[in-house]
Structure formats: structure tokens, C-alpha cells
Amino acid sequence: MQLTVVRYHQWSAAFALLMMLSFVWYQEVSAVASQARITRSAVEDLRDHGTYIVHFTSNATEEGMQHFVDRLGKKTATKQNFAVEIIEELFVIKCLTARLSVRALNWVACHSLVIAVKENEYILVGSGRVLNSSHHVPVDWHLDRLDQSSLPLDGAFDVNYTGSNVDVYVLDSGIHYEHSVFNGRALYPGCDPIDKIYHQSQAGRDCEGHGTHVAGLVGGNGTGVASGVTLFSVRILNCGLIATEASLIQGLVCVVNHRQERNATRAVINLSIAGLHTTSSINKALQLALDNSIIITASSGNGPNGLFRSINYDSCKVYPAGYPGVISVGATDIRDNVLMGEFDGRTYLTSIGACLDVFAPGYNILSSDICSMMPCHDANQDCEDGVSVCRRFRSGTSQSAAVVSGAIALLLEKCPEVTNKEVKHLLRHSLSISKVVSYKEALRYLMKNPSLLYGILDTFIQTTRGLLYVGDLASITNCTVDIQH
Image (tube, rainbow, N blue to C red; front, top):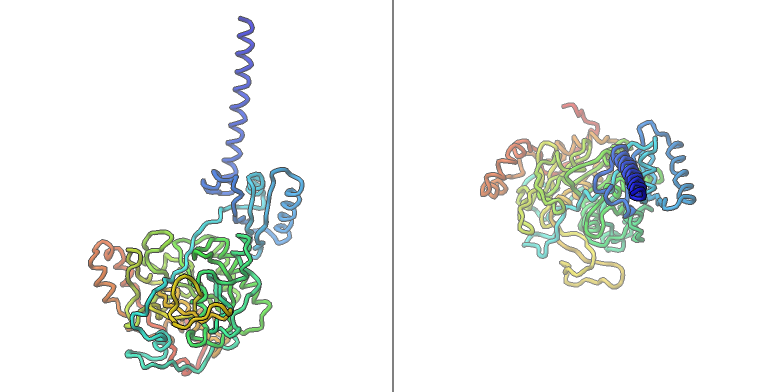
């Protein structure tokens, strides 16, 4: 009997100790999740050594952040199971991207200099779709439409500028540098966020074709609006055309840093991507670029987003185009109709609304592409000598955004001192034609689904923007405009 009592007390003490340790562990994990605002999925998946974005406090200094990184390095060398890989130091927007083990994540999250730790998420997708045929449209109709105020097309594209001395950064899936339309004007700026995050070595080279297509519309010979620009490839989309929060902010900071090394007069960032939400780090990176007098053009989105499988036709709720200061671009077809159609059994329509700045051609657009399993438009293509001549038709606001980026390059050549706000104002007024874009086809289609039409009717009413027009660019005599009127 005495022995039984002793054993009972021993087991009771052991059980109490186990419960106490479990409670302490739970408190520690809960504190980490609370203090660093880690998502539930991240807490459950700490052992995967995931990629995180570490946000520093607003009063963190560069010296303090560097000391933090140095301490991480020392702990990695001396502590067991303390693994850290710094992907990118983004001190200019008070954050960094890193791959962290469980122990390292706990230490980082509890540091006094850290305000939040976020799991790197897929949040953005490319907004252009490949088409297999031309549907009987002229191969260069998107250029033809830009220099005339009304239809029909006259078969010419005549402007007095080429975008000379302007840099355009294509933040996309990469660029096929050797494509014949670029003539050596497509370059690598020395940073590839996808390479850094996923340990690749593409150096900005395209593996899908989306970025090459977009770059060709910006500045390709025979396909682009501004054939004199210098194009830089910053790869933020993987081969599946998906970007993460980290790849986007690293790409934006890369552009800002690269500008300090360049002598070009002005620069444009083309973002032919769209997502349904933004983050504080993305907003900081966008603002950083805008504060450095870089113009940012972005797709307004194609309605149902392929990654998120949800519908949002309001351009104010699509990012990064919805961020104040970014130029939001919608798409039209060859008859000046708002772009709409079906893809994978779903209806898509260019996102519209009060935040939209301008429309531009975005349907059945022929431009440079990469050689792949899909057929090229040109019958005689040579993909073996390193100088590809492959071209394809694609549709979407990715294409219309690229067209506008090219037009902005023309404007910046003529008016290099124009401010970001003035560019937006000119696009909404002097460089667009009002009351041309038609919503009749879209409304006729949507009336077949009254519930869908009811949900976006207000958005239609708020859309008053015109179609991009550069025919009178030479006649602009005053580059400084009164943006209050």
C-alpha cells in the first residue's frame, strides 16, 4: 500500500510537470503569433523553414537594422537548429526577406526592433491570356489605333517620338533578351527576385513568354509604341505567372536602387499584374518608387482572377493598380468595346470604375514571345540560333498596360520634367479621347446574368475614362498642367 502511494505521488508530480511545460510552450508559441502577427498557417508550418517578410518598427535606423542582421548571423553560427538565410535587405522600406527555421523565427518575432513577421504569400498574377489565332485582326492594330481620334483604322502609326533616353522596367516573368524586336535594348539590371527567393539563375530571362510579350508592346521594333526605349527585365513572376509579396517588393526596390546608377532622363515601371489585396510593404515599395519620380503603370485586372477564382470588376479594389499614384489601365478591343469574353468557362471583363485612368488596346495583340510547345503566329520561326522571331497574340489588361507604358515613354521624351501627377492628368485628358469607349457589348452580355450586372452597375456608372490617343502628342506645348482643374 505504501509503495502504491509513492508511485501515485511520483506520477502526479510527473503529470503536473508535463502540463506546466505544455502550458509554457503554448504561451511561447501564442506570444510569437501575437507579437509578430504570424498567420495561423505559419505557426502550424514552422518546421518547413518558410520564407518570411520581417517588418521593422517605424523608428528603426539603418544601423539598428544592420546590427539585427549581424546578430542573426552570429546566432546561426553558434546556436543549434537556428537557421537563417537573408534573401534581401530592404532597409529603405524597413523590412527584409528571409528564410527562417522555427527557432530563428521565434527569436526574430520576439525582438524589440521587429513589429511583424509575415509569411511570404502568393498574391499577384499576370493578367494576359494567350490566343491561338488572330481572329482576322490586323497584326499591328493596337499601334494603328493610337494615333487617330476615331475609327476606321487607316493602316498607319505615325508619331514623332520613340521614347529615346527613357528606361522602362518590365516587372514580369522576364524578357527573352535575344528576340529580334529588341536589337540589344533589353537588358538585365543585376537583380532577379525569383532567382534570389528560389535559388535559380535565370538572370531575368523569360520562361513563360508573358514578360517578353509585354516588353515587345512597350518598345519592340514593329510591335511596340516606343521603339527607342531601353528595357530592363526584373523577374517577379515565376514560370506559372504568379508573384509573391516578397518578389514584388524586392523588384520595386531593385528599380529604385538601379536608377541611381543610370543616366537616363526618366523611368517607367510596367506592372502587368493584378491581385485582390495589398500589404503595407507593397504600399511602401510603390510609394518609394513614386517618390523617386518613377512612373508606375499597372493592369486594372481582367475581372475573374485566375489565381483567386473571385470576381472584382472595381479597379479601386485591384492592386497594385488601385494604389494612389499608380496609373490604372483598362482594355478595349478593335471596335473600341470594353474588353470582355470567356476563358476556362468563366466570364472576364476589364476592371473599371473610378480608379481607372485610361483605356488602351488589349484584345488580340500581336507581340514578341518565346519559343515553346504552343505554336507561334509566324510560319517561319527559327528558335535554334538564339535570336527568336516568335510572335503570338495575347489579350488582357497586361497588354493594354504595356501599350500605355510605351506611350508614357513618348511623353517623357518630349516632356522630361513632367511630374507623376501631371502624367496622370495628361493621360486622363490631353492623351485620351473621351466618349469613345463602348460598354454596350459588355452590358448586353451581363444582362443575361442580372445578379452579376446588379453587383457592378455602380462601377459602370463611375467609369468615365477615355481611350489612349497620342496623335496630338506633338501639339502639346505646355507640359506643366494645372492638376487642380
